[in-house]
Image (cartoon, rainbow, N blue to C red):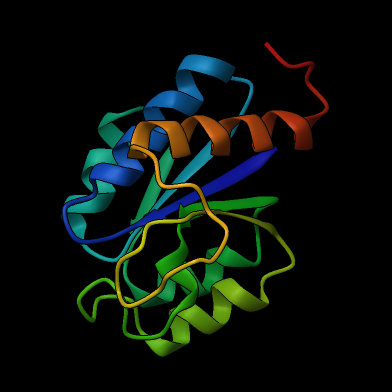
Length: 140
């Protein structure tokens, strides 16, 4: 199973997601770090991603080549992440046939109704459980 983790700005969310995926699944997943900037990509690679790429073209090309995309909900919103996520990136992610596991952070003027407010690590744990269910692994 190929999973793309997409992040931008400081890359902290992507770093945490990649670390948790490696902790839970070991090497049973192929993780591709896709950063809107080099810092985000670098942090995800250091956290255990198999490979990584940076920028608009990398995200546009790879969004269609993975089974699951994980990132903050802002990755499907044009001009989010302080403008780092271009309209073309958002379109490619939203239109990708991959399942999207979106972490519901209420930033970029996106507020997701019905979502319980909790710390980021809890959302990341929720995202990992969704990946586990998609793989057919039994729950821990």
